[in-house]
Image 1: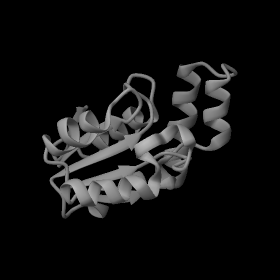
Image 2: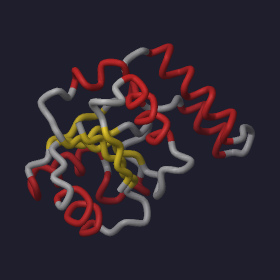
Image 3: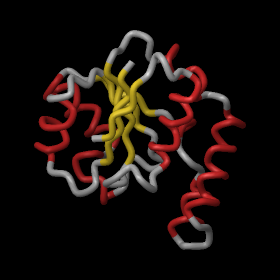
Image 4: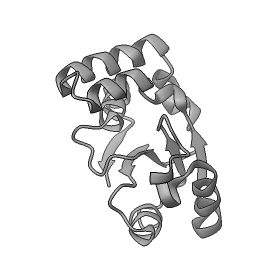
Length: 148
């Protein structure tokens, strides 16, 4: 399975839907954001995003709050009450407590090209990178990570 990651921030609709998702043959977008209805989300609001993905390129959409950080964790990091290194430890522990990432390959077994979505423009300091690294560590021979 190819596991792509993408953030919608700083991307036009064309860059997001056509250049990134369509051109990489994405079959399903797995939304791992806490808030899918923010006014800042633009074309990436949950219900709108689901509509656009299907209408433009027949891409499926799945919202997975169980793979998102908690509001408190994200707020502490964004408010600089917690450095990235500490956020990483807390988020990884949260994933281990929830144990849902371990079923990722089973949950999406019908797809070859899956894309994890969040809002951050780049993956360096984003939970989506941490998430795919945990999935890849469980299934190194069956997964490949590509950041869009």
